[in-house]
Image (tube, rainbow, N blue to C red; front, side, top):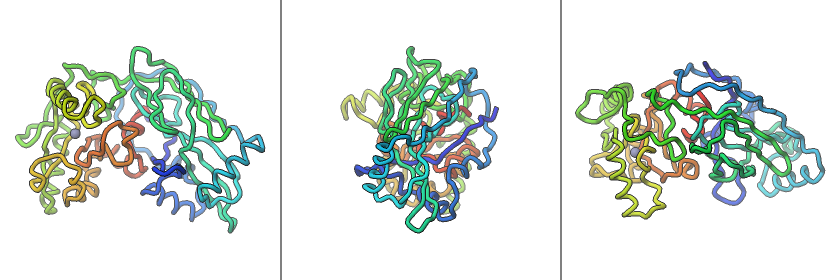
Length: 368
Ligand SMILES: [Zn+2]
């Protein structure tokens, strides 16, 4: 079943106090659309969605999201928003509407997923042009069943207390919206290139492993991911970019060893190694790249190499995406890892890049 949903572009909060949305690629896209006087959100809604594999999650009857954004119905709310916009150098001089939108607008959410909320403010600029701006200064009401990762962003951790239905309340200067989700649990017995694995998902368990492996002496990956990686490496080599897999599939017990070592070396709050059962490497869908120049090590300097530049441009054509970027550290809970790529298949990777998503945790919290 193709989920009927509304996806919005990924975004990030400025590291400075203001919280103005994203100055990266999605922002440029937004800016271009704004100059065309096009409603970004409406445009995203109209975009085509590739077919997705089925069977990742169990289906429940969804509740109905209220979908109603309360208008700024008090003078004080409107004034606070005006003041906020002025303080943040907004180009909007006259506000027409303020609403809260979410990366997951559907009434279903995958357990272990992450949902981000932002305020969409539309209005007119000093020259009368139509503008739309997004801000992540949205307060989420703490409630059982969620972990607030940063302002406007919450995870739905899997535990024996994970609710089947969840309501998340979001507030932006008195504008309130309530989002209701029925929570779907991934079927981990079924190998799936769209499986979500992170700190908040269910432990994969000691026995979990890919159904089949791609035959290669250079790396160990799940069949489809391995075939894609093989093509990727071939294309990179013919383009003169040279890199290789330093680490691909890892068993539960190997991850346990690595995790224990990371704790000894960096303390129990380290953010570089996943606990056993929570590593994407156990799925056989993740690969860490390195180069000879880096002596086979996994280093941040990888993002200065030709290899990385090639990957940035081409990885998604082979179904791979950068998993732990600089901008989603709060969301993923892991350090920036320019070397770690995750296979999600060509269709999903293309969509992920085209729509400007910034974390797989958000992308995959919508059932697909
Ligand atoms: Zn990795």
